[in-house]
Image (cartoon, rainbow, N blue to C red; front, side):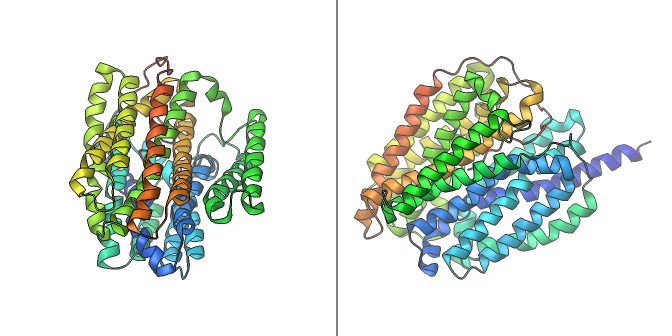
Length: 477
């Protein structure tokens, strides 16, 4: 009689180890590249546009295919798709490490993002199937901690590897982990399927093409001229494809992004401020990580350690925010988090000079980090509070995908502001571009606070550990 519970515990433990390790690996790659960017720029003779795409190629494909990955797993088998996504991510990591130029690196990063988009949602659905319902709260908490820890350690790990070896090793390190996980996952994970959701191929193609065109135009605008045929064509074409995407999603039987969810004012506004948060914060991290090395002269590891008051603070603040959420209400915490992030970026925009002392930057880092921790804790609860229980999975996935898109647009737009006002020519030129870019990020977050005031009280309080029907909410970039 005791063999079955023991076997069940063993299965749950193996599933957590495999899925948690895979999640940590793909989440780490969101920010692991940030402190390697100056080294990549020197070695591959890359410009600002190439560096933007090194970040955006991964985030863009990750965001676009996040919902698709879950749907494919439901239809063709979650373990099978998990293995396929893990193999794609591992292979693309090897190609990125071997990249002879920035073009190959960007292409490999895009394929990495595709693999991560398949792996990420399936880590939680596989874990949910292996853990008894009464233990899911603890399991999902540990799953979220693995993701949050990867985001916090990304800049430090990337800096340490770049300094002690070379930037190529931030990608090589994924290969032995992936090679070890593949046979282990095939052996220990149990196959499962969902309700046989049909893939929304037209919607996926229209959305991918539209976002690609829009981001391509934003990234190339300063370098090629905003009225040049290539830039204008990309912007107009991307906008037209996105309009077609919205029109298709309104009538699709099983849309990749259910637009009916956004008819709820609370759901729509919560996701709007979530996108704005990613826009301001992660667009700023992209530029600040370079400032610490290019202008301040810190090594990659030193730069990563110095961003810890920002990137690691959410790990400390999120538990406190969770405890305060019941007492103060999630909306108040979310608004306070946005306000602190805006204040942090505003402080940095005011304080930064070419020879600024690090201690003068710390208050901005701490304010922004605490703000992120206060934001992440209530946002998932608020998103789920505006939908029916059967819509929780797809609503959570849509919210996370939009936040990833906010990261893409933030890097593109803030880099465009940076390039228009400054550049890499000298420390002063860099600061001339960084200051208005940070100010724009702070202004967007400030506007999000005002917009967030119109979020109504949620209709219900979601269950402590709902079973994800499609895609989980992630605390990532």
